[in-house]
Image (cartoon, rainbow, N blue to C red; front, side, top):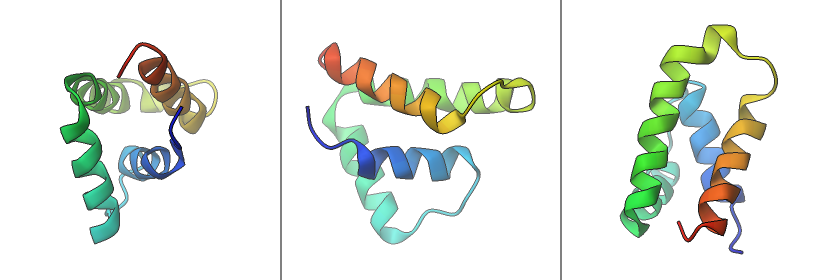
Length: 76
């Protein structure tokens, strides 16, 4: 399994509403180009952020990490 930490950090920063750095934008762009599954996950995370941020139990980072691992295991 490849190192998910760089994209995990970028997705967490994005989800938190932070402005992404040039390096983070490059990481996100490459990750999105990597597969259609990544693009779908990014859309789902955007929807999840809008819908659930006020009603979330637990850690958003753990949720995002779990989704990334799930995508990797299923060939994402």
